Length: 358
Image 1 (cartoon, rainbow, N blue to C red):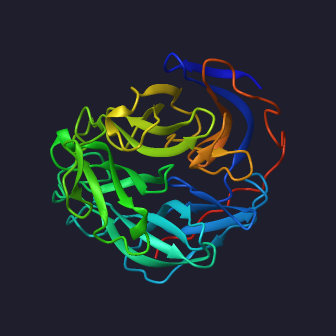
Image 2: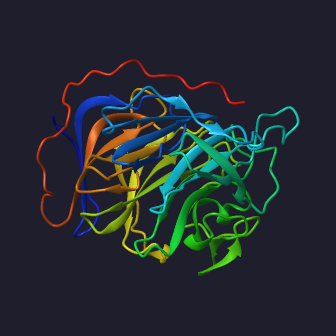
């Protein structure tokens, strides 16, 4: 194993990317792939317009993925991008939905974010409806190749006090000053009835409704997504790093031509989710990968109980469902570090493709 990158990001924080034996998620990936533990078993959901779930002892020993069943097809195609296992039983999840047919003679859409709940460990879900939507009408002249507006490509995490669930998402429409990576939150008390309970961060406060409200981006776009030369961070994947005692976001940076070209992957830190101004300046940790577009960076922690939203000093770094790396988080000294890979050289069956969306 060799050192690929070492990026000092503050006086007390540093990230290292090290090459490791290649490992792939068991199904095709087109979003953040959330993970959770239930009954001592690790579960992973992969999505590409519909979703599959697999389980096993850890991320390296997953079963053949099985289709996730949703009680309604109203919000298909659907990408399940985040989950939270309630200690009291239900599994809550959140999805990215792309409504079809919004622009005549065009595939442009404007995504929305909705909520789900499962009582059988993620095998099936009940749709709780859309909870985050944009205030601006779709711009059917947008030239990025995919979106004419909307909110999507997100992740969700509870704060350490168990008071709120925080949503890190992208705003693709409206004036350029409102585009980029944004944040909203919802009291955990409303997790079972979330419609109307999400509030966006706007102008210094959590004052705008999730459905149709305005926002102030945490990481503003440099060039609007309507432009063929869009220049913005997007696709934030957040986790709590127990070693750093800080929240960490990995996100992609697209620049500067249509169809989401990947310039690099960046990291940013903040110990306090309630302070959107507290995120550190993004630092580049990885350039464009060779094997595909390089979207959807995320971690999967390697220890029992760790997931895509919880990791320690060392985790697996995935990009578009494939991991060629470990990611190490430093304070002011090297992190605890032992075996570079729990299963070095372990072979894996060919990737399983998801069925087409309904």
